[in-house]
Length: 309
Image (tube, rainbow, N blue to C red):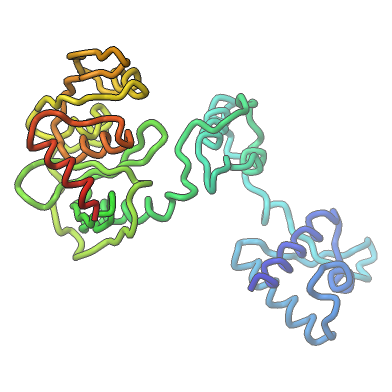
């Protein structure tokens, strides 16, 4: 299959670059993939390739190579290949350029070729892309989107634990994709998970298996942090080592310092509503944070550390 695709690309390049009708004999001699074929094999390949291009919306036409019409060659008319100018304004082309700059696939921003076909765009400041990297997450994002769209259960592993939710929506925050949903019970709690930390995603069950809560909006999720998305506000007292103390004060909005140690450590009272997500963020600090109170939250943290699976 790769040989056929390569031959089609070579054929297109030959015809588009020539700027004139190209005879079948020239195509056979110039286009890689045809040269070692017999007359009959070349004709079969060439006819199949013309059909393939026609199915792609690119038709070859025969035109005379000179005014006497003695010899005929193949061309690709502009109207059969080139895009119609959509008439974008300068501002619209710049917005497209910014969008291309923001989205990365496979770790790299998209190239400028498509924008050039649309008439170019005002230069956008080069540098590191500032949006979501879809490269490693694109397949998983598609599965979550399918589950949300079809209202089917989503099973996955997260922090080495098997979980299942009824997904309500997907959203993007600070360079990462998240998905949110209910646990299938009557708690009304919406749980949030970061996509790049989920693995073994599997869409399960019949379509339309649950109803999305009335008034649910990903915008509302975006306005709060994952550990703030429960229904019962509580306060956790956490001891933070010096190397993370300054960071944590800014990381947890609404937190209040309780005590500062001589070594720079800090005891902080932090509001939270969703215990699992709060434990997740404490574990992210790799032992530099310890939950002191409440006792049930501390026990849950210890259990998670001792039995990660």
